[in-house]
Figure (tube, rainbow, N blue to C red):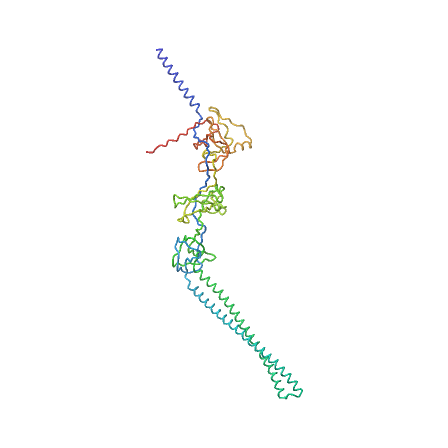
Length: 475
């Protein structure tokens, strides 16, 4: 009987010892946090900003109607490549063509009148020259006859010449003076006639200038009944059909749009970059562009334009022109020129651009998810198991503000504890971020779980468990 009690007492003692050891173990592990860890490593890091948008050409030109009428001919179709100055379409132009032909006839008539006036002026000049020569001849004859008359006068006074001969010389001389006056009158008349021809020529030349000006006007009106391409490009939109009526624009309304020509000399990807990333975008940064319609291909490009005006994401209008709350998400337009666009690219295709904003060689990096933020007051050491937390005395406003200062850092595993380290960061990659100070290569940092990183306390006891979680297979 005594032996039986001894056995029971021994078993009871062993049970109490086991329970005590288990309780001691559980108690010692109370407050231990299970974490996942990684190491601070060195690697090449690239910072990339991803944005979506659409393919756009360098510029669009809407070919509008400059005259009213029916479309009698459309010489291109959508997708055709056209050259600068190429005829694209014709609008009915019976009346302007008739005006041009009539004005050309009027111009020809004015030119004929000018030619006739010019010929008359030339004839008048020749007539004046002839009459001037005759006048000079008459004056020479007058000088000769005056000399004869003077000699006759001397002979007559000396009683050596008969009165009849003397009077004949006198009358001949007087007649010659009358002939000179007549020649002078004819020269004056010829000069007056020349002035008339000159006036007619001047009038005819002004008529030609006027006719030419009117012809230019009618030619311009006729030209507006034809549509020409202002650039080398591609027809991207052709909303009209043969026989449709079109009208020109007036001040209060736009005219009919015949077609749209896209300038394909430079193809761009116009994307919208989030306001948090736009500060990292710079001109000439390289980008990789993917087009939804051309899968499995990547095209190179570079940034050529960065918008300065924020665009509301919900409406697409400039934020400065909208009454919507300023708290709404905003984007900025960024234009990327494609270096070697494919031939099959079309305006309006959806695309995605990955813009490389910075690169680092052999940078010290950590996973992005390891980075966290704590208030300075939350970095006080965690209380020991079984002990109540220390309640700080009443703080001044300055001390309270200092305790609420936010510090960026990571938790490093050291001696089985989570030790918070303040870090300065650089560029951000797809999954990692550059560390500029606060850590060294090989440091073991807490990388998970997300809930642990958010809630773990400074100097808390931790247990490392980097086993991959088991995923249950659904039957």
